Image 1 (cartoon, one colour):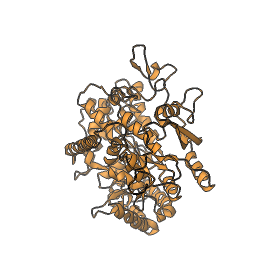
Image 2 (image 1 turned 180 degrees about the vertical axis):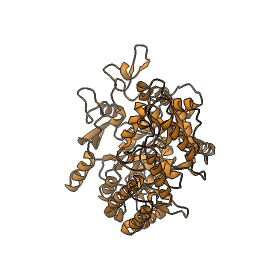
Image 3 (image 1 turned 45 degrees about the horizontal axis):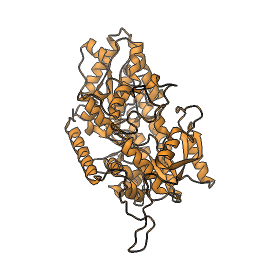
Image 4 (image 1 turned 90 degrees about the vertical axis):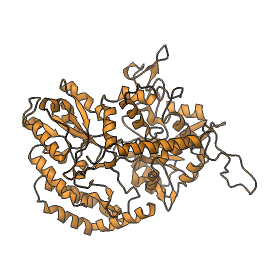
Length: 566
C-alpha cells in the first residue's frame, strides 16, 4: 500500500497544534467575540463606541430566516420549524427571536425553487439564509443583497469556531468573490464520505482469504465469492461487488470511483495534475483502463449487470439482503445500512478494509470537504452580531459537549433523549412519546455546529480501547455500528490517498452553458464502453469531443479561478 500511518500522525499533530493555539488565544474563556472593544459603526478618532455584541440580548433582537424542511424531519404535536423547541431555546437562552419569513417542505428541490422565485420577484430576503446548493449560493452572492461575512466572522466569531474553521483554510474558497469572503462555510465532519471497502468477513474466513491489497487480489476474492460461495448461493444469486453509477461515477456510496484511482484519476471532479494545474478527472488517460476493468468485471458477473441503472440506495439492497460480498462506502456504514444484514443472514459479519492499489501501488479515493453549504448574512440586517451570539454558543456547548454542558446528553430533553428519575439519560424507544428525528436540524444552521475533527478524534479514542465518557463518544457507541471505530482507523491509514474536489468556486460561464451536455456525453460514453456497445477507442473520441465542445474553455476558466486562490 502506498499509504501508512505517517499521514495520520501528521494530521493529529497539526490538529493538536491548532487546538493549543486556540486555547492560548482564548485564555479568557466564555463567549467573548474576537475583538470585544471594536466599533462596528466606525466611530470618530479617539472615541470607542459600545460593542453591540451580547451574550444575551435584553430586550430581545430578531433574526429572520427561511427554511427548507427535510421531509424526514419530525416535530412534537403543535410544533413546526417556525415554532419549535429550538426557537424557544434561542429566545430564552440568548434573547434572540427567530422569525420565519416562509418555509417549504424540501422535496424535488422546492427550497431552491422558492428562493429563486423570491429573488426574481423582489421579495424580502431573510437576515440569515443557509443553503447547500452551490449555484444558488453564487446567485445569492451576486444579487448584491448580502454582505462581507468574513469581516463579521473575524470580528465576532469566538476562538473555538475560528479554530474549527482553520483546520482547512480552503473552506472559504467556494464563497469568496473578488477577495471578499461573502459567506460563512457550514462546517462538516472530516472524512464523512471517504471510501473504504466493506467485505463479508464470514465469507472471507470460510474461504480462507486474506484482505485484498491490490486490484488483482480483489479479483481473486470476487471470483471465489461468486463461484465458490460459502453461503451456498449460486453464481447468479451473488453480487460480488455491489456498485452503481446511475447518479455518477463519484458519489457517496456504492460507486466505482476508487477503481479509477488505481489508474491515477478520480472521475467527475477536478484533480491537481502533475504540473500543478487542475484537470477534469474524467478525461485523464487512466479512465480508459478503469472503464475496461469495469467492463471485464461486468462480463464476469463481478458487478451488477444493470449497474448503470443502480443509484446509491440500490447498491445497498444486495448487501442488506446478504447476497453481496463487497460494497464500497464510508466508515459509518457499519450502522446503516449494513447492521440489517444479520437480520436476513444469521452470522453475517461485515469488516472494513483499505482501498486496493493498482499494479504500481497507486490508490486514490474521493475525499470529503470540511464543509457542506454556506450561511449568508443580509447587508440590511439590523443586528448581524446576533448571529454570532447564536453560533458562538453552539460551538462552545454543542459542537463537542463535555460534562456539564447544556447538551451533555443530547440536543433537547424530551426530543432526542430523556432523563429517568435518577437523572440517567434515556434514548431511542425509551424516550416517552418516542424520539424525535434530527432536532439538530431545528437550528438556524443545519446540524447546529460541527468541528470537523471531533468525530474522528472520538472514534480514535474508542478504537484505542477508551471507555466512552464524553457525549460524542457515547453517541458513537449507542448510535453507530459495531465496526465504526475500526473503520475510522482504516480511513486514516489511507489518509494520503484522499483526493478532494479541487474546484469549489462558482460555476464558470462556459460551465453554465455546456457542462450539462458534457456530463451527458460522459455518462453515455462510459456506459457504452462498460456494456460493450463501443470499443475502448470511444474514450479517445469522447475526450476530443469534450475538449472541443467547451471542455478546454472550462479548463482554462477553472485554472484562472484556481490561480487566484493558490
